[in-house]
Length: 288
Image 1 (cartoon, helix red, strand yellow):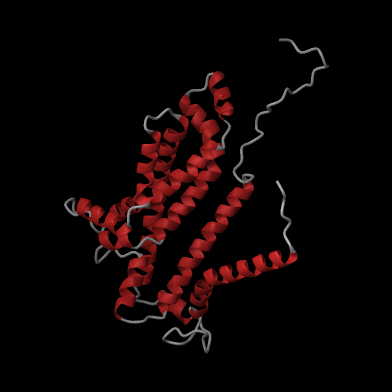
Image 2 (cartoon, rainbow, N blue to C red):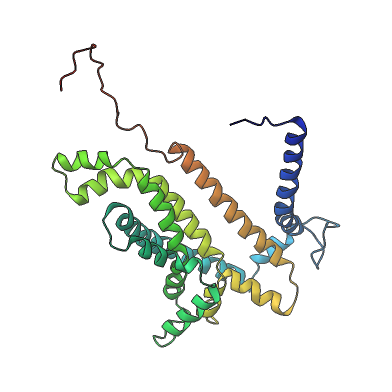
C-alpha cells in the first residue's frame, strides 16, 4: 500500500479550514459573553461602553434570578446523585455480568437520548401530575435523571471496560467478598470516570429546559425556564449575563473533566498487572 505524504499546501488548507470551523462554532459564545459586559440596554454588539451592571442586577432586591439559580443548582446536584447510582448499577450489570439480551437492554438505556425531549417531558408531566408532585425539586431532578443517566452509563461502561478484571479476581481469590472487591478495588479505579459522569450529569441538568418547563410551577422555576419567561415578553440585557454564567459552568465542568483525565493517566488501567514473567529464565530452562 502506497503511503501518501501530506504536502505543505494540504497542511495549510487543513489548518485554515479547521480554524474557520472553530471560529464558526465559538463566535456565538464569544458574542454572548462580550455583550453581557455591554452598557447598551438592548444588548448590541459590539458594545459602545462596558459595565458590570447586568451582573449586579441579577443580585438586586426583588430579583428572581437568585432563587432560580439556587433551584437549578439543587436540582442538578440531586440529578447527579441519582444518575451516578443508576449509572454505576447499570454499567456494572452491562459490563460485569452475563445479562441476557444485553444489546436490547443497552438500547433501552440509551433510548432517552434518541426520543425528543418534549415527548419525554410530556410523559413525565402525565406521570407526576396525578401524584401532585409538579413543582417539586425531587420530581424535576427525577425527570432530569432520565436524560442524564444514559450519559453516565456510557461513561461508566467505558471506565469499567478499562479496568483490569484480574485485579478484582486477585482480590476475590484472597477471600474478599463482592462488596469488598467493589469498595476496595473497583470503586477507586473507577473514580475518574465517576467524576466525569457526575460533571456531565450536572451540566445536563443545569441546562435542561423542556422537562423543567413541564414539571415546574409558579414558585419553582429553574434558571433556563426563567430565561425563557423573561425573553417571552421583553428583551432583558440581564439574560446575557445569565447566559454567560451558563457558559462558564459548562467550561469549568469540561475543564474539571480534563483535569480528572490527566490525574488518572487518561483513565487507562493498562499495565497494572504484568503479562510477562517477572524474572527471565535462561534459555532451555522452561518447564512444560
